[in-house]
Amino acid sequence: MPTKNSKPATTKPKKPSPVKPKFLDTLRVPGMSPAFAGYDGGIPLWLLARGLTVSVDKNWPAKPGDKIEVLSIVGMKVLAEKTLEPGEEARSSFSFAISDSDLPNGDLILGYRVWYTGGPSNDLSYPLTLMVKRTLPAGEDQDHITPGHSELNFKISDTEIREIQAGRGVTLTFEPYPNMHALDRIECQVGSFLAPPQQVTGVGQQTEIKLNRDQIISIGNGTSRLVSFQVVDAVRNVSTPRSRNIPVLVDVGSANYAAPIFATQNYPGLIDLESLNGEPLHMQLFTYPDQGPVGYTFFASYQGYPKLGGRVLHDQYIPIVAAGRPHDFFVPHDKVRAVAGGKVEISFILFQGLNIVGYSKIASAAVQDAIIRLQAPIFLRYPSHVVNPIPTGGAAVEIPWYAWRRPTDKIMLLMRYVIPGSHDLILYDDLFTVGQVPEGVPIRRLIPYEDLLRFDGTTPELYYVYEPENILARSTSLNESLRQEVRIGAPGRGR
Image (cartoon, rainbow, N blue to C red; front, side, top):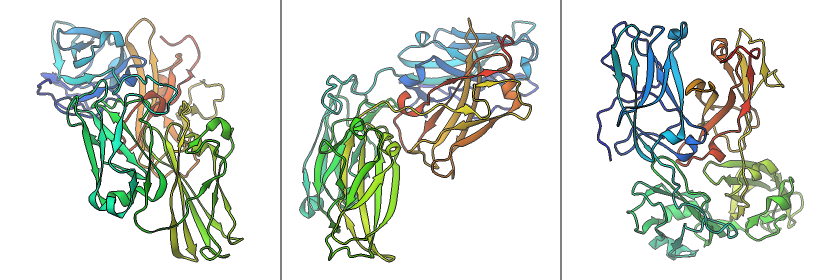
């Protein structure tokens, strides 16, 4: 593990000082995982998919002819370089694309050197100490027929949990797995309860999580509460897919009524997306006439849990119009498909007017896995994806709604263009928190004229990266949208 004395990376470009500093600010790596255990951050596998993007914020009195070298500090290997052309000294930052083949697996210390025009004078930046990790926890799934990762195994002390078992606690034991690392964390979900991430006991050792009665009550009652886990490493790589689901009976507390029934389920415990064929998920709610007479109301609730984290919600008030008969509850197809590879839970609360009469048990099912990608953002009013002429007031971008979006999600909108034959990169990035945007409504952001002008004559990729709150796992399939190639300005002007 490296030791260092590094200055944290800046989050915003600083106004350059008229006096050259002895050490320049650290460079930035958009999308890197947060600092941990002696490292400034980590580089997961998905971030290397199209080369590593690094940015240097201007923090010196730049002039035309200044030369920037991005360095691997160990050995002072030049990974990318750029000489400022007239006019570029006014830019606030400079971005580069580093080839995956130029990066090690393991420790990496990045920095940069600025050679000042007109002489041998130069300054180095503070180092940025990173861990690059290309291996996924548990490695490859060796069995693509049986649901769940073949190398992720665990057991539960009790598969029927009633008051006695809840009182003494329930223990989950997780077995060692390939590519195990001492800083790995186990993320386990038991029914509706997300256990706090647990660092593994040690490489090659079993890890235990014990659930107390309060946590077991949070699981929710049901005859088939699903238990599964995934492993997230220090740089936010995640085991793919999750472990298999183990069904557990839970009967603790005050659930009065039978769980909702899956009316469109061909395989017990599994929702087959192909069989659903684009239609809503059909559920039925039932109480006996003496439990739910006419005039009472079901508050039906659907909660979907995507395979890498987050939550998809759908609920509806359904008046009882015929006592003792099933009442229909439909979940939109997009809210089911968004949970592919995860699981769903459906339950209801029974109301008499505004008063709660009782709660149902929870119906659970896994959802067939599928590749679900976030749709690419688009420029509004430019259906052909050609922004020409460049509007002086800037151009609005629309980020499509996704079913598991939450107000606390962070989104980074990116426009990226690698100049052919070089490591030089034109990059626009806009990091923001979603906030209170109504369900189903896309998000709009404005890219200013000055930033669009930097891409004049080029064909950059427009996309975004999403990061949910309190979810460690990251992967290209969930966190990064599809990329849309766009043209900015008239062809032939770009580099």
